[in-house]
Length: 329
Ligand code: AMP
Ligand code: TRP
Image (cartoon, rainbow, N blue to C red; front, side, top):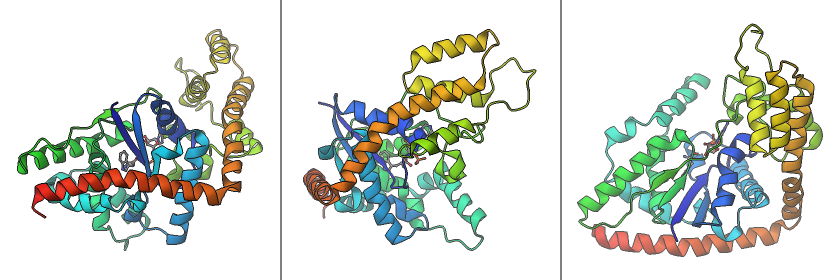
């Protein structure tokens, strides 16, 4: 069976973009591949953060992923597998400074930091982030890595690192991981459909997958539809985004009905929004219920995730043992 590895940072709430762009795909892949999914808390230390919040967010991300259908035996918390950091160190020694300085995520994030605060320190951890990501992937000998297009460059780097390691230590040890892209296009912000849905834009820009009914209805109701340019024959990005969400929720009947209204010029936005809100609630209500059940059994669930992390750790430890041997440690 081919192996799949992916990971997500414990950013707090899972939003619709994360769900359709990543998590939903993870759940499906579990049927076909040997899957390993990480909540990568070491990665979250690369930007300024609050330790108490990090711990809270790590567990809440675990609970949310489980509620969405990720199997517990496939899930681990990165810091429970400290071998990732050891391998990252070793891989860093076959990765050049020049390669890392070309990473656009590093440039974007360091700019973001200095925009927010002139005196902010750009940590070398942020610079080294892609090497840790390569370690996440290579340590499990993953064939496939489901990620968004924005992670292309990091994946390419992981392949280069694998190749350089193999060459330097004269063994075809690491395989070359490939990306698995999702078919769902980017979900856009409802409040500003010129941008992709993201937590960093602020609260009104994303829909929390675990938000309550009133919240979700209110957010969809206030979605921006027209951008003012009524003469344009093209569908506005906000309306297109609502249709995309309907499609992603597999509401094809409503989608086709509303689309034919649009084409005949009789589409009203209120019923479109209502259909979207209904579709989202049908999707998310079971998740919310499962989340509450999980939180009610927090203690057991935490113990189970510690167990699964320990199981997964034994695979990582085997890799590090072999790598140490190859490297002369
Ligand atoms: P982030 O929280 O931005 O680090 O994203 C975590 C995962 O969700 C990545 O795999 C992204 O590609 C995916 N993702 C984030 N935002 C969106 C979006 N608006 N539409 C589709 N996928 C997204
Ligand atoms: N950098 C990824 C992101 O921002 C998260 C990540 C960390 C990851 N390690 C990984 C993704 C390993 C895939 C594989 O979304």
